[in-house]
Length: 254
Length: 247
Image (cartoon, rainbow over all chains, first blue to last red; front, side, top):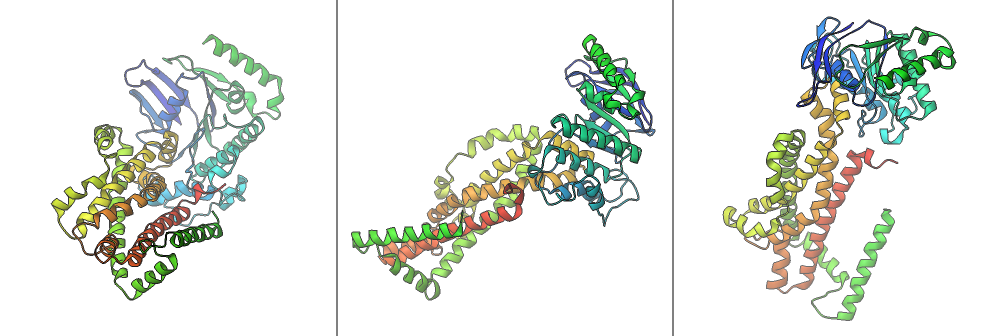
């Protein structure tokens, strides 16, 4: 689904973050992008989101070169993603309104889909937001805010979910709750997930594949398979603990 | 603030005025009872309504003009670092100049009529709105912009769905903060080269006719004008920016 070929990226006047970097993502995979701060994991996510562009090399998603945010990719950030002046419901409707604003031009919105009469309530109900529709972001908890951000993305029927440390400012229980919710949604809607995280435990839970990035420049992708992530009771399993240890050692070495 | 408390405060002010008038006991401080009587008489039977309408029109026109020009300019400067770098030294120099000292110059150039008065007030409001809207637009978190862009928003949709609603509170705050100054400067401007407006009415009654109750009625009218504008902006702010007042 996603192909990075000989990707180079550097910010103006600094050393490159990625150098001839190759990477492939298949449809339905769940990737965790793990690494210390400054390793370029968020940069990579923004490139995938079409918000930053490689200095050279190629990024293809579904065979198409990415020159702007792709209508079928959903992006969820750590904070500040919601409009503070809009209610939960208005925030969830935002993407639909943007699409209605441009019409189905195939650039800002997929061709042939101009949402006019949309009903976001069923989705709000699914995400336990139906009692909060008239609340503003400042009135709800961090977990509720992120559920709103997820709803806003899902209403647009994405096939690719890009998340940048979405749960790192939440308390442990809420975080686990939202991790499970995300996994469930990926499963139900057959989403491809790419989640940036600096937390080893989160990477081990969310990713059935983990891309480990180190100090830039990143040249060879370091990929760790995590097939056990699919299994029941994985959070409490031996395999999970071992993977976390393994990841920690690798990060310390890198 | 409770409505009842505001009413009580108004009552207290009138009481203070009444007592002062009794103590001073001179025609230059008439009692509020007399002034209010004259106020209504002048308003409905006299010329005051005409003068008040002229003043109101001047302030409203300046408010409209300044929002219409300063808000887009502020939005553009807030979005473009390069333009802002270019213009901000100019704004930095012009913003703090007390615009009221420009009254004689503007009158020299624009002469009599409404235009010079509107221009003076416009200059005050323009910079206030420009600076607040610019800073509001520039201060929007990058994450917010990026996530709305990821929903497919290009430049036009960002304007419509992010920058415009974000600048609304800044516009209203600027208006609320400067409406008092605007009315004050209107008074000054109406002392020159006009025979219409509450400023002229106050001055004429006080210095030429020595009709102090009428002069006080004019002062009352001008105060009510400022107060009314302030309350209107405040009301708009509560209505249009509900999110700022929720708990």
